[in-house]
Picture 1 (cartoon, helix red, strand yellow):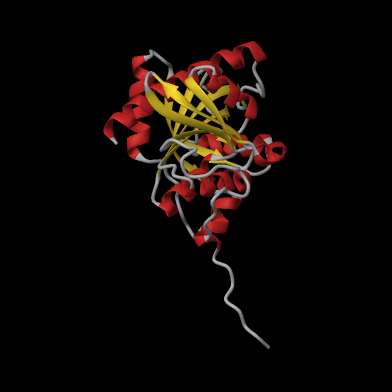
Picture 2 (picture 1 turned 90 degrees about the vertical axis):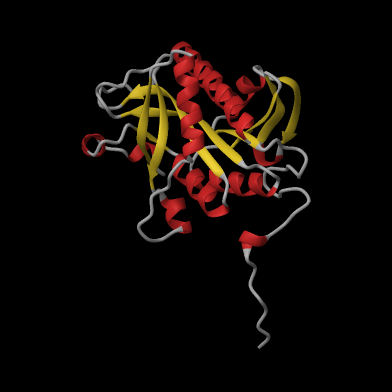
Length: 251
């Protein structure tokens, strides 16, 4: 029997990343991440000198400039497994700061639909546990959180900073679970932060996340009206892009 060395996937290298279709030189060092491909198009509308990047398996992205600051945006699709693949390949292609721009369902009475939530940490999901199968706290980078807070304040946004719950199964949440996590001090439920923070921590890059609150699960609101969601999304994107300029000036 011939024993061969098994593949170490963490050390694989490609000219073009196999799932997202980008290569070194396609990206800026700061990349915004969106689960929704449609939100990527909204980000592109804020940028100048826009170039489309990626495109494999629906991983659509753009590179451009916001107020002269280089920035890229790429979809991750929904859930931790897909987000982790996107992050691994973006990092291999040159990303050094990853900022998720997502939506969330608030689980605190005082958080209103239309507010913004900046995540400091996230409860481990299945993907995070696949990377680190022991007690572990996926955490955002201080520099990213600080920049998001500064940007939100400068724009006069109503926002919250704290822990979120990352969860794999959108439709499995029960009323008892929602109340339980609210009592634990979690601000909101979402699906990708934990995986993104975990990959960033293990690979030595910075990461953060800002969310548009499009529902309040404690109040029984799953989704706000689409017109309100779009308005909140645009304000969130503007806040994230302003944070990008702050981060870029300190790199």
